[in-house]
Length: 346
Ligand SMILES: Nc1ncnc2c1ncn2[C@@H]1O[C@H](COP(=O)(O)OP(=O)(O)OP(=O)(O)O)[C@@H](O)[C@H]1O
Image (cartoon, rainbow, N blue to C red; front, side):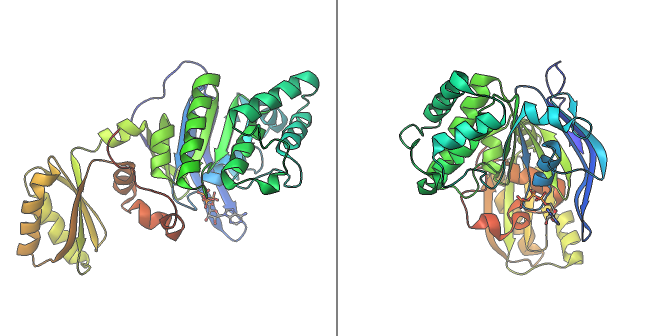
C-alpha cells in the first residue's frame, strides 16, 4: 500500500486495523492484508468496487465478524478482546436497514436508546433532537413502512447516533437513494462530522461520494488498500490531464506494447495505462496533446472511436493503482445508479 501523506493529529487513532485477513467458507478471500488508520474527528472513506472487501472490514471493526488473522482497535479497544467496549463506543449503520417497519420512527429511536441503556428525559430529548436534525419530526408518529427510501436511510443514521457514539460506521450510506436524497444525505453527513466532532468511517463505491465527504480516502481493491491520502493529494499526484482513447478494435499484447512505446515517446505525455480497448494517458496539456496522440495512433494503424480529455479524478487514481477502470471493476451494479465519475479536481 502507498500513502500519499501521514495522517494528521497526535491523538490515538479512532480506528486502527493491521494486516486483516478474512477468507469465507468456499475459499473467497475477502480481505488480504487490510490496513486502515482513521484519525479521531475525521471522515474517512473506504472506496472500492463491489466485492472489494469494504463491508467485511466494517463487520470486523464493528465486532460482527472475526478476522482469520490481523489485529484491530476501535476507540482504543481491541475488537477481539473487548468487543463489548467497542460496541458501546460505536454507532453502526449497516447496508440493510435495521429499523422495525411496523413501529414508528419515534418508537424505533426510543427502542434503540433503551437497548443502549439510555432512558427517561435524556432519551426523549435526544429522540426529539434527532428527529429534528434528520427532518423526520412530521413523520415521527407514522410507521416506518410508509417512509420513502431517503427517510428510512435518515432514520437509520439517526438510530446509529442515539447513544452518542464516538465513532460512526456508515456502510454504503447512499446506495439505492435517488440523486436528491443522496445530496441531502451528503449534507447531513458533512454537518455531523463538523458539528459533533464525530469520527466517521464510511464505505462507498461512489467515487463522487468519497471525493465530497471524506477527508482521507483509502482505495480498496481485492481485499487490501492500494493507496490512501486526501482526495486532493490522490488527484494532485496525477500530473496533468487524463486523455481517454477508445479504440475501434482491441489490441493484442504486442500491439499494446508498441503503442505504449509510441505514445509514451510523445513530448508532454507521461503514463499510458488501460486494457486493449481503452487506453488512458496523462498529458501536461490534454487538449494540446490530442492531435499528436491521434496522429501517432494513425501512423500505427490504430483506429480511434472516441477521445476525451478530463481533469484528474479518483477514477484516474484507481486506474493508476489497479490498471483497471473503476467503472469496469464496479460492474453493472453502479452503471445503473447515480453518477460514479468524479468530475474535476477539487
Ligand atoms: N458471508 C459471506 N460468505 C461468502 N462470501 C462472502 C460473504 N460475505 C462477503 N463475501 C465475499 O467476500 C468478498 C468481499 O465482500 P464484501 O461484502 O466485503 O465487499 P464490499 O466491498 O463491501 O462489496 P459490497 O459493496 O458489494 O458489499 C466478495 O467476493 C463477497 O462475495
